[in-house]
Amino acid sequence: MAQVLDIAMRIPEFFKGLRKERLSGLRPVGEFLDHQRISRPQDLNEATQRITYNTRHFSGNYLLLIICLAIYGIITSPALIVAVGFLVGGFMLINRFAPEPMQVGEHVVTQKSLYTVLFCIGIPLLWFASPFALIFWLIGSSAVIVLAHAIFIEPPVSSEYSSVETV
Image (cartoon, rainbow, N blue to C red; front, side):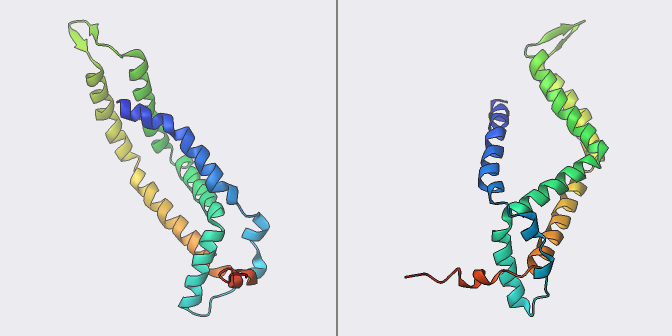
């Protein structure tokens, strides 16, 4: 349980680092959606070069796009929101209000028994909310959108000379 709390304490640091590293490299929307640079690659080699360049160049924009798709997927799945809310809320309530065993009638209720009840109800609830469908939809939709953008957006001419060193 201490490991779970340690991981939970690191989540804000993770998002701060993510914002500094990835989202600081966001390109302007005008550059990201420049319709004048849209063209079909001539062959597979050119498509591969475009994917390589554009995924590095627009990595912050692609990450933001994937985050928006994930938020959309979660919002449009109310059963998943209820299931995750039930599990997270139950976990927090058990930690806060039942840290020590309690006597209820003739029975002694421990944290372990409360967690067992929580997971016996929460896991089937989560199963019916189909989080795997959301995960696979997110992987598929983001892959299609990112790869389509990376293939059809032509890199600028300056990218041709980025590997040349100046003396």
